[in-house]
Length: 201
Image (tube, rainbow, N blue to C red; front, side, top):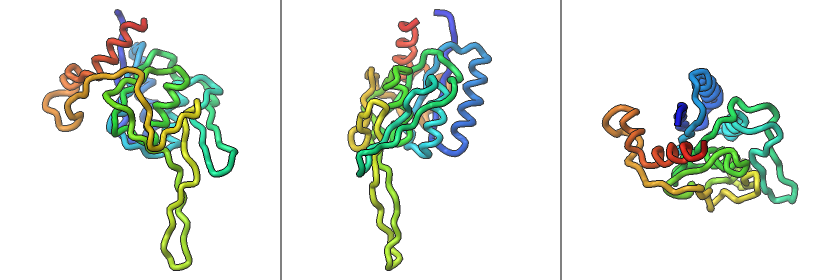
């Protein structure tokens, strides 16, 4: 097929993650990319707000990003409120080290039918919302007050998210010899993603 696939790899959800992703995505749109691979492998998570901001770059307005389940019956629901930066086809790559905010983003894109998840295993399974309470003696108590769920209310904590399509486990992403282009060409999961995008035209 004719077209260009943009490759976006996110290492962690820091304060700069969302603006950097927005700049990268806008640049790739201007270059004519018509599909995307978002690589969340080995991303341990970070700021949930950053994950939500990035999810909104791909989801339609009023799409659910996440929900929570707490000790009370009332859970919070986070919903997008502006148009996406792109509606192009996309695949999200995950592995057993994709955790926390990575799972929130992957789950939001999967449950909304926005992206296909490809991975060699399910994700880590970290979805606790915890608060620290200071005790009288100066020590602290870490208490789980709620748990994150995907938009379709699938539990993340201790369960993880299963990919829609399995791929061959690649060599280590970091420290591999050669250029990025060579690494991408030999990465079985990226090749599976590209094949999937080719078939979805």
